[in-house]
Image 1 (spheres, rainbow, N blue to C red):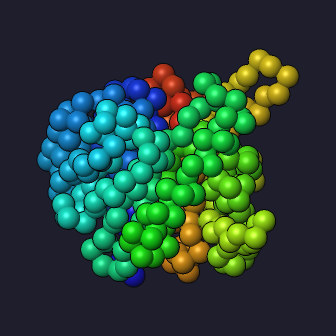
Image 2 (cartoon, rainbow, N blue to C red):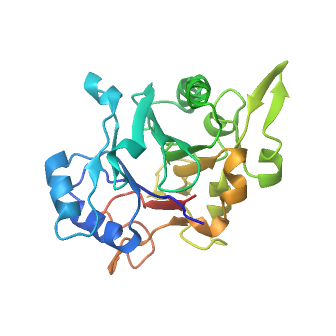
Length: 275
């Protein structure tokens, strides 16, 4: 069955286009989503497309016309196959028509960080997202929706789990209920497979971001970069279709001690997702 592959990476404002090319060559994503990208678009496209069998194009983002977009999206699908349909500066909605199969609604996100906001402020800002996503789903007339990006919150935080925010649960069977009623109103559910990527007993690293804090609470590893999936897409999703990447070609993205190698790469690890 033909599938669509997404690669997301917060590149931490670094000139990592060489590593991006290695990732693209290794995984050939149909859609590449970048957060904190300061590389000029022309330079990025030249690096990705030179002597490649694929041609990546920049996807027009209407939010970017306001000078506020926090994301860059590139695609090797036909130009008409990926179209921005709105959103917020931190959450852009794209209507994606794969080469084969049913259309998707992709919500690319880069939410504000705790470096600038309290956890409560993050949750309050995230409460804007359900309306934006629901409006997008009404516009495209389906709920084959995927959220992918840097949420700057862990999967268990209220800004991700609350019925008034993204309403993402750890249990596939619960997500398949599609919604639940809260205070007399129905709230649609997402499934969050990133819960199963927490800690050492996983197929990859313990998270996607590492920080050794000096305060009383030090989690060290955080799973800020996430994929959320609507129930309508769960029959097509297998857990092995989602990976936290630790290599770009032959280049290790982790140090010998197993944490992100910020000397040569980003403080975040990339996500690879196929649906």
